[in-house]
Image 1: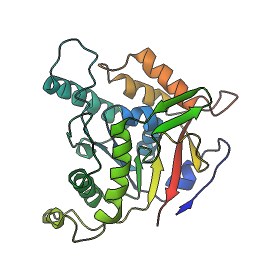
Image 2: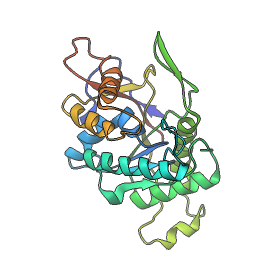
Image 3: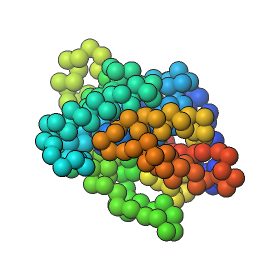
Length: 256
């Protein structure tokens, strides 16, 4: 595995994306993309890159309402998410919901197969997904959190789907009934929630931050505009001591 090491907040956008045309973003729930990579995705689409967003669940257990069914909440959250994806510049045909029940994501062949199909159909140059390794996420000395089980398993399953399942033809051969599907090997990854990793890199999202915030706030069953603003400041404002620049951080790996 070849990885690039960055130790200070220098914008790595051109280094990573200059030769990329198609980026696949795989996240566990609606609003995860905005929370961890919304500024980067906005920058990518503004730059003419094609981004496909895959949500493994529709967040149908993430209720802060007193009275709502799972079916009702799924509809609410997908409607909010669709508006947010449009705000970020993602085309409707590249906004995908697998609809695995919230809180039940497992690293199993069923989910691997669904993600392998998305890789074979979209044929990405790079995949953005959750941290697949750490159960405890370390952000700073005083701020740490548990890596949501759905997040951890989504990251792990996405990596499995990328290799070997989307490449080798005898895995899920039924995929090739779709003429758009083909064997595909994607070896470049950006992992979110990897703040203290020696392979962490930074993407300058200063100019795209307002779009990130506006998109995040469209998940109005989960966030207010003030909360979206606070989230953006928390996740992007800690890297540049002057406060003039805002960065999203990722672990970047090339896994051959």
